[in-house]
Length: 114
Length: 112
Image (tube, each protein chain N blue to C red):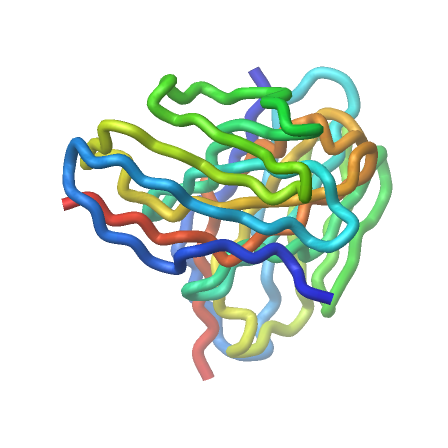
């Protein structure tokens, strides 16, 4: 079945460091890919998305490129801030309709220290 | 414009009891999905409601049931609670035919 794999955390970085969180997926067809972020005590917020191969999603300095050849959707940010400390979830959705469930990875916890 | 709202925020129950969680979708959204997020894990899909019917279901036992009302709000019911049901329960809404889903802040359910 469809699945998402993420690099294990926790990840600890100093402020202004470069961030990469690896994500690979297994799915039939051409899923839409997402990154969600969860701050402590809160629900999930959509960070960015890509719906087809070679699309680049970007938001708040974060970006990820849909790589069909490597079935990957790695999250990157050039300079992290303390406020980026959160849990990041890579996810996929098989189709564009809301009928399709979202499949999440296990999450990667990020701590940014001053 | 209010987003997805869930109630209650926190709930403590004992084994064997029953619980009802509530969700109001974002304005303009007619589809509601429920997820269970155990501590340290990603959310797992429970089921989805559209037009007051369960449209899709994940790998959860029949103890988990739901309902959607004509105003699109939804309830999640869990019977015969087990310790393993302790989790954050997330509701997500979306407009039919369009992505992505918008999530509420969840209900933290603790089973003693």
